[in-house]
Length: 437
Ligand SMILES: [Cu+2]
Image (tube, rainbow, N blue to C red; front, top):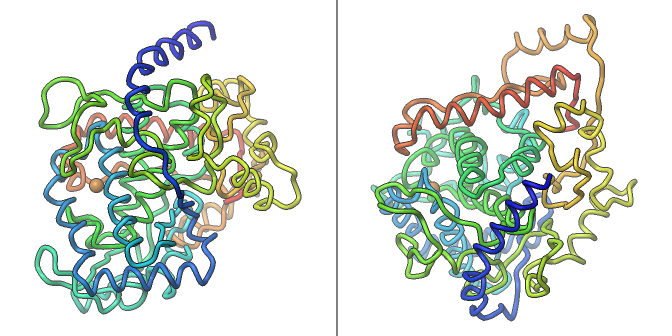
């Protein structure tokens, strides 16, 4: 405990000089709140679709696929993964605001749909639409982008090839896993690799088609997904003192340690300008981000919608007056050794809401398994993906080799990372934990 405190103090002192330079950025006059896709009103979603359709018509949409493709080799598998993708989403959001100042990129808290992703609202015709048609170049047949000709790289329809059997999508990472990830990733670059190699990759692979190409921003699912990845980073940044400006590690194709003074590949700004929502170009925040218990008064700022988010926390679960203490009660009843290993914030009584996956707010529970209760699991397994009503958590998969090679990831690093979260799933299942999701 003492050692941990020391670690945080050192990290804070090390980052405080850089904090000063980043604070020179002007505070945003107006801040957009990015909402979870399920929380956007019908009118908001209609506006977002209309703006994107106009952007596409004007040839403004495909530039993001071009930037992403050109920088691809530099911006994956290293620390810049986080700030680069933050910059790319802001770029699209700011172009959208030229069409309508209320435009924003919703985030998709994909973990909430982990068990049977294809049944998510995101894949319905009013949102992104479903799978591609295997008899027609895997072109999507409904949803926001159906009928669009994507000009980049070669003119083509938007393609999707869901990665599960019979048009389903393989299960991915649960809110419980993301909660553990937020609590156990102590250093920035460890957090980055934990996210990049787990939920980030799994969602790209689930879509297939354009989403597994270098020009993945062609699919608006890319922006819903990366808005969510960015939200997780912002939660982590506000999860412990010293995290806000934490950066470092080794970038691909670069010598020396990554630094806040580095320029973002493809953009003119410094990494240090990408750290604090609510300043400079980053005039947005998230509907579930919550003010950090700051060590300096200067960290209390408009980028964190504390009153708003408190309201979100309370309304999402009407039966509880919830401040983050009770909504993960199911996890809190796990054994001490599991808590210490996978949910250290719980075992230390740390209730910072940024250390939980909060946008869903449901309670898990512990149920002791019996021989009888394991039967439906065997039946569900026989039926294949997508129909599993059994509440045990599925084991995450190692991403396929083509995906690892394409990103030039170290396979060992990916396998080690995924195995860490497989161990979590095994521990939860062994204790009879049942996810409410
Ligand atoms: Cu990317």
